Image 1 (cartoon, helix red, strand yellow):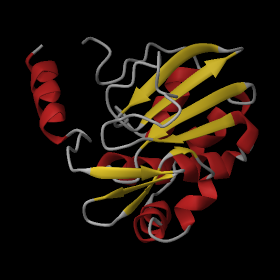
Image 2 (spheres, rainbow, N blue to C red):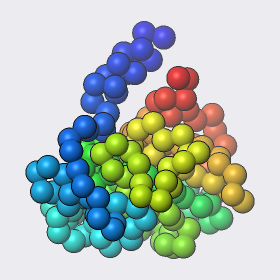
Image 3 (tube, rainbow, N blue to C red):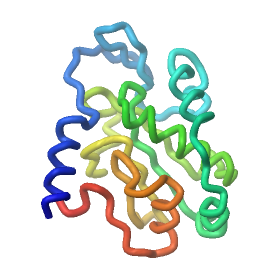
Length: 181
């Protein structure tokens, strides 16, 4: 219980919650530092373009994929729908989403099976895509089968992105860091 309380306290201190002023325009958000953030539904290719490519390419390249676990995921993920809520301004999204995308590239997950949604600093979207999704921290990766949520990874993996996804898809007892709150 002490570990959970400590984890919760630390996550509140360091979670992706930023109150800087921002303006929204189409599918972009400009914060007070003039950094352009993606906003709303986007394509993964956007992360390989300026101004996101500097963090995305480095973290994608440097992530060491666990191919043994990834190969175990392959047969389990075929009929899974994935929704990713993230923020290009968020340090946790910058760290964990490239690893996730490296895995999905290896697994050859089709774009039609993934819905990528970029959020504002206030964790909202112009079309309220976060409504009824219980997004408390990002990145949040939601796994669904036949339209029904199986489970989700919230803010960071408990073990690794591969092991967490494998545990979720294989039906093992998986709880994200905020499941008990």
